[in-house]
Image (cartoon, rainbow, N blue to C red; front, top):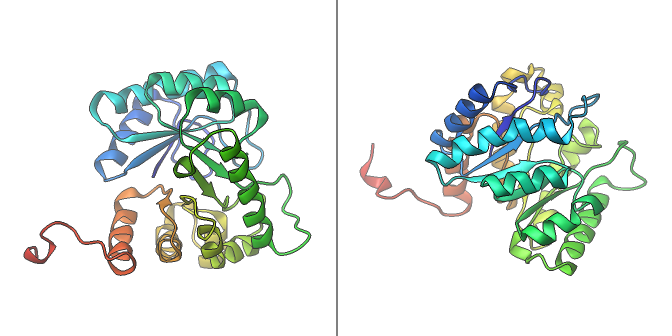
Length: 260
């Protein structure tokens, strides 16, 4: 899953409010080999500036249109607003990526649209009464059960432990260590560690130089059984995905032994 931020305040420094630039970036992600493109028009970084429904729609629709004109790539919309979700799906988006899970505000829209949903674990404060992995797994299990109860098929419920959301750097490392427990819930899974601050704390690297640290988390996530990796550096991470899949999941490219 390639990340496209149509924002001026993305933590990773790769966002743009210019629809043409954002659209070009999205297509570059597609051409680099992304299977999905995740479009967000409101930053989720600490201290972010809220965006109105109208502005969010204006930001994302041109990018969706550009992708849809030339590609069948799946498109997910990173939003908390049902109006934005409806407009995005009407324009060709396929998936909801909700950083607060299946909120009451989004419930009717999700029922109406019958689309796959990424349900992410999140907290306003990084405070846990017990083991962080216990709480993440328990909360996501409850969210998945709720989604099933309203008629979403299990194959369309994608669970995301929320790396960097309501978690300290130590919490993120513990979640990485416990990913197999999330996978054991039996739903498709997604992880988004790309360029996150916990990688910077470990490696000492700035945001733009965290590809190698990200690669380690991507490989380990796949080894734990995670299905989707949400990344900024699609071209580089695709090599990581291919090599890890070839070892862990016995995947091989077509006619791979004939190439050099």
